[in-house]
Length: 342
Image (cartoon, rainbow, N blue to C red; front, top):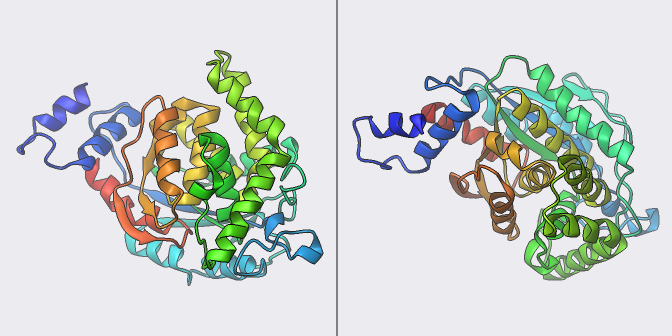
């Protein structure tokens, strides 16, 4: 391609800049320009709670080492600018947007945008995490966030929500066909017994939503040609097993692709959402830049599954620092690399 030739014509050995060269090619193709620009970027963090994280006596599975009340406190810190994601965004020159798409209580704090249709998802071991209408609202919330970001050339996508590594593991297992034992890690600090419990929760969630999961597998296996049928099938999986913040990330990816904005995808949870997005529409992969390799064991499976489903497979993550925080921290740290690639 012209972008590849331009890279090869620079005063350096071919491929000596490694993945940065492929990022350079991708940003040229995305912006349809041999002189791409990445002048403005925005970190968008979506926050939502999960029914599976509730205590058992409240109808949940107590899947996390931390209670759900942690979600709003971290969302407040992000909005105030004191949490890691917002601090790192400032150091790299990115703007910050924090969006409540499903925190289980109302959080009234300056800088936190409320855009939700439900207070956390349902317990997905007994049925769908959310209805298609609720999932679609979260999807649209993600699109609205990208629109609010204005004239940016890159967005870094992050998330926040107690229990969302359990949800992400279910999504990755459903779309990749991997056993939950391969996708469930320690999350925010589970001990081995906690991880075993998480595996059981994910297995039960997939079993409870088996009709939807198996239906999408059939759509993929028979190589369905109708893009609307493919998209609907993938989004049914997302509504059955996903989180509101994962749906919002998927929506943000759809909108960014439409607007030719580069998407810096963070670690395991953001990658699970990106996997749902490329299953719905393989072409959105053109906008995806995988930022960081997560410490979660299921992340490599998620990355491989994204690449396998993509029409333009993104290269593997550029950073590997054993990050496990979320909040878009890895995506923000990769922003200067994208600027250098452009």
